[in-house]
Length: 212
Image (cartoon, rainbow, N blue to C red; front, side, top):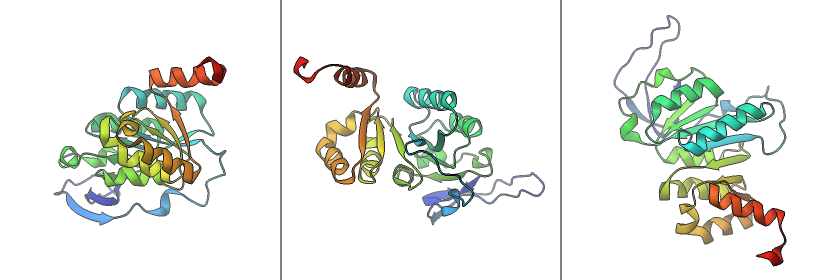
């Protein structure tokens, strides 16, 4: 795996022999490279390229199951996890994202990132969550990071005009006016996917406003 990203950790790898050395991790400050979007990519319908923030939780794993069932043109562009990096490795091999973010630098410090596929860009730290939430290649952001830790990336997605599948209700509790204001300015879309809120949302879609 290539480790890129603002404030991330990287280690050199040797591919010719298949032996991956394990030197001391070195801090770098290189932004995600643009090579994740290649000229050979075919156009996709809007809304079908997804970043899953908090991929190892229940919402994240359910999202990946849905993407697998839907198939093309739906695809996973980026995945993140806080500390469950073993699970993130398996997900990376299963769904072939372009980018991976390990949000907790402390948990990532001694992790062997060469376990990730060689063609996946990997970054460490919460700043990288903002990058995969606002990336130009992404249409839909599944915001499933627990608590206020998910606010910055949710706000970044809102400011970038993304469709946000919001499972992190704390983001609206803490900064609802900021998120909704950003979405109004950017033309983004907010869809609640947390169970109770999604049920209310779907009921409102199916019923009449005077029934509320």
